[in-house]
Image (cartoon, rainbow, N blue to C red; front, side, top):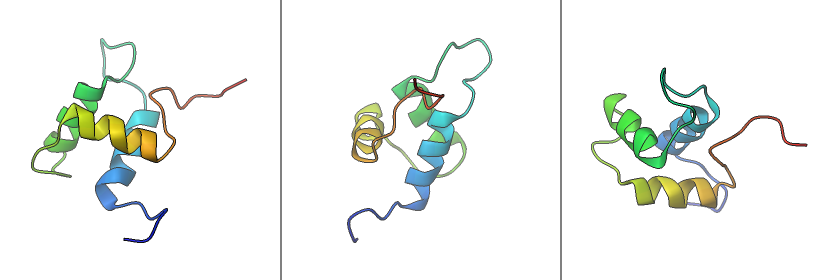
Length: 68
């Protein structure tokens, strides 16, 4: 896959990380994101470490709000 191309599940992950956290949670955790991707059917299984590496690779963070 060419550098800079994002897969469908990676796009879902980035969108989730930038979305409001689940009710009762202050922010998304890596484990919550992994669990949600499985619930949505984006992937059969995924580890929180894969979520971390993917967000790092795509320069995303768990706080996509305004910076500055």
